[in-house]
Image (cartoon, rainbow, N blue to C red; front, side):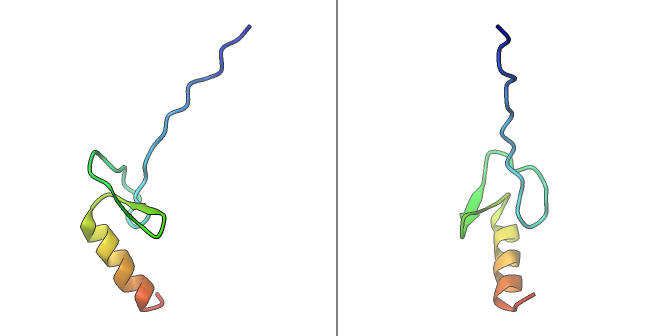
Length: 49
């Protein structure tokens, strides 16, 4: 019987697309690699961009 392949869970920043390391920030169920990306997303989102 074959074993199922292992899955690797990667956390990708919603704003910049970089891999999130140990420090992650969440906002509106979105994952960000740092507070800078979260803040940039908030500004753009609030501006409708």
